[in-house]
Length: 137
Image (cartoon, rainbow, N blue to C red; front, side):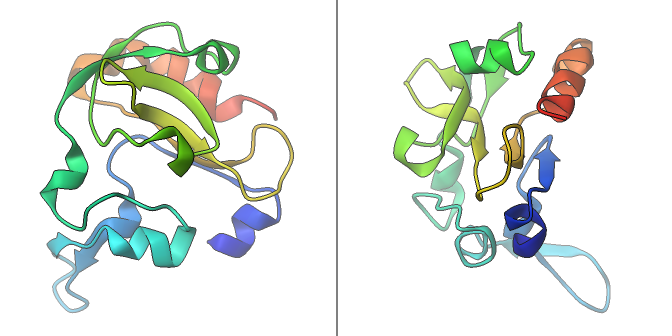
């Protein structure tokens, strides 16, 4: 995955970062969360390796960069990150943390690992998520 991102690829995650899931290799069932695995595999650091990493649910609104990427509507989000943990902040929550963001790996504009959220209440924003996914390409 990291070599794909470093070669200019783009991954858009619309929920929990899949790198944090611990999966039983036989049953294929999720058995836990390991936020430190995102650091090892993608260089994405979460402040805690337990449920404190969720940081609560807070209203978030698009930043100037988020609007450029195609976001228009705010929504309630989680897993807020400090600015120094990400490269581009697309949405910021009311506590000032980045809830939708981009981690760059040296590719062209619009590439990298993109964290967004698609929840049942945000399905009306699917066009905005499409804009984010297509940004730069």
